[in-house]
Amino acid sequence: MTEPELVDKLKETMKYLEKFKDKWHTSMFWVTPYNWLPEIRSLIKAPEKLVIHDATLREGQQTPGVAFHKEESVKIAMALDELGVDRIEVVPMISDEDKEATKEIVRLGLNAKIIAFVSWDKKVIEEAIDLGVDGVMVDFVGNPWQGRVFWGMKPEEITSKGLEAVSYAKSHGVYTVALIWDDFKAPLDFIYTHLSTIAREGKADSISIADTYGQGLPWTVYLIASMVKEWIKPATLEFHVHNDFGLATANALAAVAAGASAVHTTIAGLGERAGNAATEEVAVAAELLLGVKTNVKKEKIHYVTQLVQEIAKFKVGPNKPIIGSNTFRFSSGWIYYMLTKAMEHGEEEGMLPFKAELIGRKKEFVISKGSGGSLIKDKLKSLGIDVPPEILPELTKVVKYEASIKKGPLSDEELLYIARKILNNA
Image 1 (cartoon, helix red, strand yellow):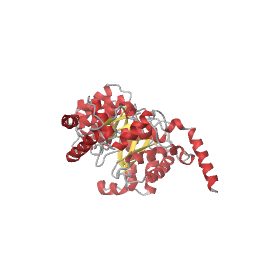
Image 2 (cartoon, rainbow, N blue to C red; image 1 turned 90 degrees about the horizontal axis):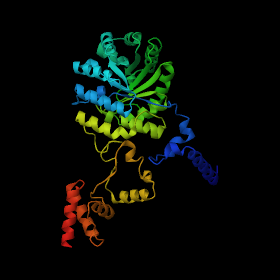
Image 3 (cartoon, helix red, strand yellow; image 1 turned 180 degrees about the horizontal axis):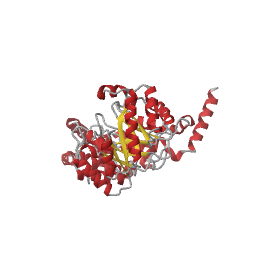
Image 4 (cartoon, helix red, strand yellow; image 1 turned 135 degrees about the vertical axis):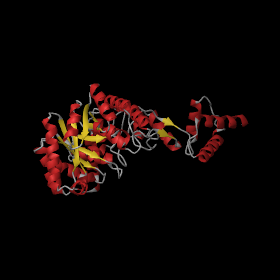
């Protein structure tokens, strides 16, 4: 192919992508169009709508130092329902208080399905079902090593006990998910035998594979999920993942691309060790990057994630995707210039993957060492002070120095103090 022919072909590709522009560029977001290349879309076997199974009330309390009282669990459940998650996972077996919380959550009659996390103990399963939950998620091992080391069980004994537990739950007429953990360290032949038996003989409604230690590459997750999806039919596939290598959201999307119908998530990524895939990250990324719908009301994300952090007494880092305090906070003079220019042209989304308002937030401009004269001048104008052009260079120099000494943004009061001092001495 000659260079002109290549250029023409690439132009045709861009024309093709314009057909899907509403998928990657609206007034609220602008993401890469290349997620919609035919070579990429041919790999995606995702459902039209993704089920968000929020496990904050269970995995959240496995975060060291986090505990929810009954009233707090109920409040979080109500907020999750307002957010629009499809399922809320409860864990009545860990304490009497959590059992009482489950009763109250069930009594509320929320739109979300209430799914109880249970062990493979029949008594635990029965007690959870008696609370009136919509379904149970039976948790048991998917790795022969753990079965041998923790319980002295042979591989076939693990499968037999898991099958018995799932069959028992199904006999009570409730929706039953088998959460089979640490599959990603298990031999492939065991994964096949174990999961297909549970699905077909146990009649599980859904099988959740778990990258318990967050160790799979996204394309590894895609491959394993694709195989398992075929092995467990007619049961549907779900995915549970942790964030030990910072890949939880990427791996969740990989599983969805492979055909997983539900993903287990937590608000702010709360959970064991490095946490789980974050509800807000998976929901926004699934919709904007994969083009898969969810029932999550994105404009509620800021409110709900702030509420959970407050109750959990757990504050995410400022650079946390979607909800970190710096995500829509700007101080660089150069970035401020480009962002304001984009706003003047009515295309603010050109400088962002999505607007703050999409998730119920607002932009914020702060003054720091990297701030330029335009930002400093505009910030002071919003505070009621007009800076003469001849004063601005000196003011900018002093502001940069003070912010450097502070090693942080200047407060409005600090900025006003500096400005008034310089203006009075002018």
